[in-house]
Length: 169
Picture 1 (cartoon, rainbow, N blue to C red):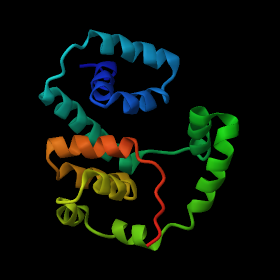
Picture 2: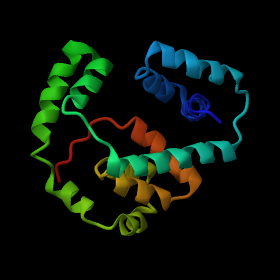
Picture 3: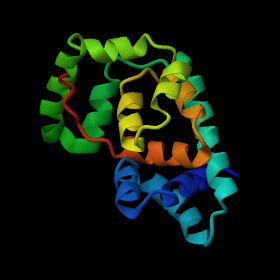
């Protein structure tokens, strides 16, 4: 299966609103390529969804420790997503938040992800998604791998649509 087909499977496994949010982040040429595959798909076996999702998790885990990020990458991504005007306030907020992380999220990052997964296995997927969003990519990948495939999909869907949540405890 080629990357565009895998992307089509991932996008089609989301609900329509979520899929639209993901597609907003793609260039027109990418949308056309992935759209061709989306048009060809009539049924997606659950094994295929699980396989593609698992491959995504492995890729995220691998990239988590070795991804080189340019200094202007955040600005570039946010500006492409929101436009110049919409990005200004967000970028200012992002720049200020680097040094003022919540101490509780810092403590979460110090906990073994497997142990954290055990503590959260009975929590609602939205709660788990919120926790994963505040961990490093490596930690989130390890933690996510500990859940069942259906739970991984549900958590990943919720992470994809997670909005800003105040972290005042």
